[in-house]
Length: 528
Image (cartoon, rainbow, N blue to C red; front, side, top):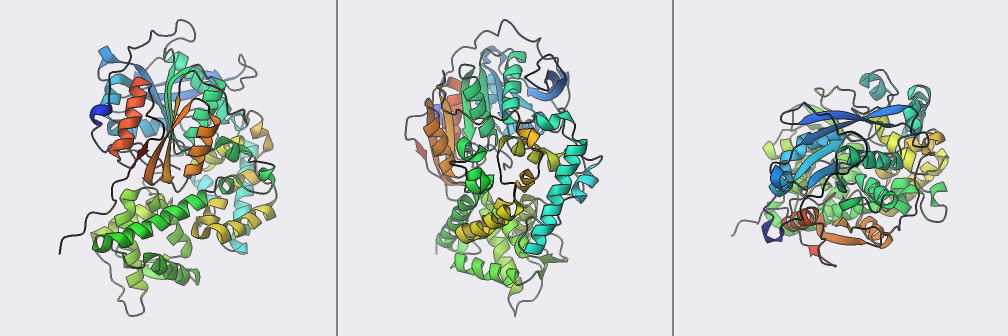
């Protein structure tokens, strides 16, 4: 559940001199054999056991990419980055976002990305022959709203689970975050780092916590950002896994709803700087109510052609936009444009470039794929392959329906979409959980863990960061009093960026209780 990390600001005086580079590990696997690949990057694969209970048995491949430190004389080691998802390619993420990381980090670290087992360029879970076959088995909507759509969704989930049980191969049963944490420890040794330096976003926070508990003395600095409470996510308290799906246990819909409420508040306060300002919450509710009665035809600002807009589409666009406050001006323009087009007296004509950008961004955030991207990156099966290996979920379809109804009543707009996000776990082969790790999550670690949480995170609510900080005895919570999913660089906040970079460079966390304040997402209104 992460988009793109972007560089935002200077780091200022908080960047201090780091400790000298430790000597490399003296024993273990041979160093990685790198070969040139994407512009300036090197790529490699390393072998790890399929099953760590049989370490000399079948081996699988883990794909890596690396950009060397730009100041080799002051190199600290490797910074291993995981983008979360679950199911995202760490290789692609690092290659796309390397230059957005602060210059200080790029100078002192080799920046390394890897594809977790079962995903992308590593030994991958592939349940179909082609991407077209995989997409054909998915429903033609973002999430189900009606009983009829729920039945379509159920059939699609069952087809995917059956395809993976039949064609997925042995990797299906070995994709848990515990397996990946053991791979990460192997990678540390392959990279000749005495101790690991790790940056994990979103679902990568579960991997980071798993690693910290399994290998508490093996890292020098470990950042988790956009944090999942591991107890809530994996099993939930007191038998919650039997009645409540994982995303509902995490209250992701509550986080998204609170973030959307903040959009309405900040938009109204911005006045003319926000195109949807003025009782925006009530106007959004009317717009949603109209679309709930049935899809409406609008002129798509991105193409100038008619298109159908449904309530399902509106929720997907709104959810995508609240992931980053930088998208809020575009969201305001999009909502104002749709409201105008659906007004009884409004002519159905296209509007300006801001609306074109907002609808295009919303479509992307809602998960619509560009026809140009047809590589079979196994995201369809990769995401549940990871999530369903780590988490326990209800096996009764009726329980999922009841949970969706309850979430909509409790959390509003985003209750249903989040309830069904990992619904494949209902019918996923239970053998996939044989290697899962469900605690303890309270192991004392030799080095402190830095936990970063946003007050208004639409995917991993702030309560997840607070819960993780309470569990890990040697951890420090850095709070961002702003909006969006994950904080470091994505939200372009100089305070967060400085504190996280300082910790990665020095292994010294910020002071207890540190809170970073957000910058306004809307430009100041012009003086009158």
